[in-house]
Length: 606
Ligand code: AGP
Image (cartoon, rainbow, N blue to C red; front, side):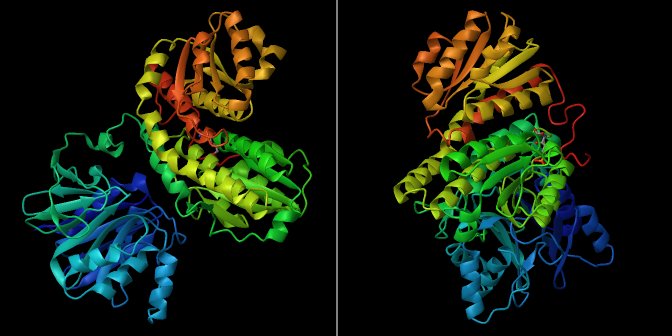
């Protein structure tokens, strides 16, 4: 998720671009750059933050009243000066900034190389600039229109030509893009905060919209360049609210982003009834040699690893363990060259996880990183890395990254099972079919968040809770309990439902709240019995159950139904109500949800 901003008007563009980028830094901040058309088209860009770009600009003379700016969250190509946006066409007459992922950029790049083009960077974005130049015959709008017809993937792009100083063109598909209308000046941005100080008159562009932005006009076209009308909204948010997209906290915004994250995490990996990981280079011979799998991580990432353990053994029939990184390297685990170590980390900088990674490598394990931040330490030290494409996660409590971690882990296991001949084509096709429905099912859950808020309002004085479940519902219970603890400060334990009677049931009283996760179909009757054990002691039970399992209403005090999905895929979306319980409990207590006490987003100490 990057930040893009564009300006055309009668003022100096540079300060407006820099100011806008600073308000988009929460969208990405590993490199940044600007392009301005003055006497000539000039580009200045750098690895690092906006402040690093400002330092670099002190030595440059960038005057002009039309320009584009970009702050990057790398998806292809490590963060460095060369890979930073904006990107130029081969002749340097066209310049592009881009937010998203072009899935077919390698095919397009090969086609252009065959035509004799020479590329300068590793990015997918540069291909867009080269293509526009291929199609440019004096009309930027037409050249852009022809280019996007070839693109597959997600993109919000903005394009300038040094031969056309009175307009820029932008396009939106699956990545957000807004336009702002001023007096004799107009703007575009990935998100409203970037331009809100200059105009409150905003157009929220829709997928497929192509816009021609000039000083006195913004024209919106469909993919065939037919003029279309888009409503102008008046936005009266404060800047800080706008950065949260109108949500009260980043955590809630990030939960509501989860349907989009689910789509982005599978992009390029699930299509035409097939699961694939083009970025992985794993031989069948090596896969067959693996005799032990570890998922090593901390906190929420560890809980994603527990999910991986269950499904690795189920699908691959290889012994698998989920290990807390801070314990793993001190218990002298069995590791050799036949060990595969999955290292899971949102930040990619967690000291305990890095130490466990280094320990495992020393012992001969092969390592695959499951990461969110491109170029982070974990991604540089593992043998191979698979990115979850969740975008920057600002809230300390991890939500959308967990959803993407669980999703990518399952896809990897399915992919390996296929390679090992442990999955039929029909089974793979059914899984793909289920994945393609996940985005909308996740959206149907987040849109019912008020049901969770309503339930929490009746239990906000609770001082401790149990989260219980069996199999994958147990893995979810661990994550639900951690979320509640870390942002609402209510003590919670995630426990195997079948284990409650072996001790913890002694704690259950009429003042107890138990969140029972009962979505894993094969064991739901067992879990139902455990819920009855709690009810027999007077405990209050909220059940998270699949639609149609109405029996649960005879036992639980409240039920939140989640859409039916295949048992092994369910946790990707069934965690959402658990995240919302934690959020609304913390909100009800008036706590600092995005920055909970004692905690840091990335724990870089042992
Ligand atoms: C999760 O909500 C917490 N912020 C914390 O447990 C976190 O998951 C853990 O510190 C691991 O972080 P990482 O994924 O960046 O390595």
